Image (cartoon, rainbow, N blue to C red; front, top):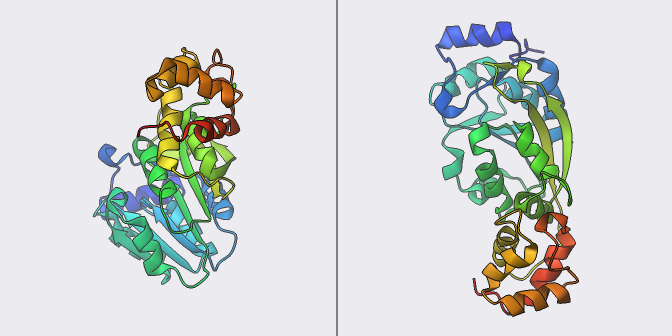
Length: 286
């Protein structure tokens, strides 16, 4: 086993050797606790035959562990200083590094390019906080099959993904994510295991795609859900009537969906929102 990159000694050594000190513009915080990256890799990969995509490998703390558990890792890195570091320090032939902004990547095209027949595809990442949600929704919208996504993110954001009805953190993001995935917490991560140390703690969350729901127009469903949470202190009726642009229709649809108009969106389950979509799908003008 190569020396772990996820230590303060090795991290500083690499930074000085290649002059790759962290850049705030890329939201870079390097992990300096080996047990954290080992646990992420263990949760992310169930079989060495799985194709692993990593987003933002940095200097390779997590990449190193992913390469030990998978026979093929493809890493997307935006910082042009780092591909050389990864190639020199990781030392695995089955690692491919692509210098590209992941937000500009065609996810389906990349999966088609690298996946072998019947091969499972997983994503793993220590995501920069500022871009966590856009990247995850980019993956949620992919047409090609993804088995699971395992990511480190700001703890507060992770709690929203995990939240259930009647919990303070529950919002449209919670509903839309759980429509697509089973969501579970892998571990909490202290801010003290990063260099430099961020101002907040982190959480590793795993999204396993399921196919429980098949709505006719998911885009309309997502817009409807977001509209119901527009103003959290208002009742679902007050928010929903702005979406359908008809007060009486809004009230009737809520009643048909067995949702009390005086409730708030935070009190409604995913199944409540699905029923509301189904009873009103002929009326929604989106």
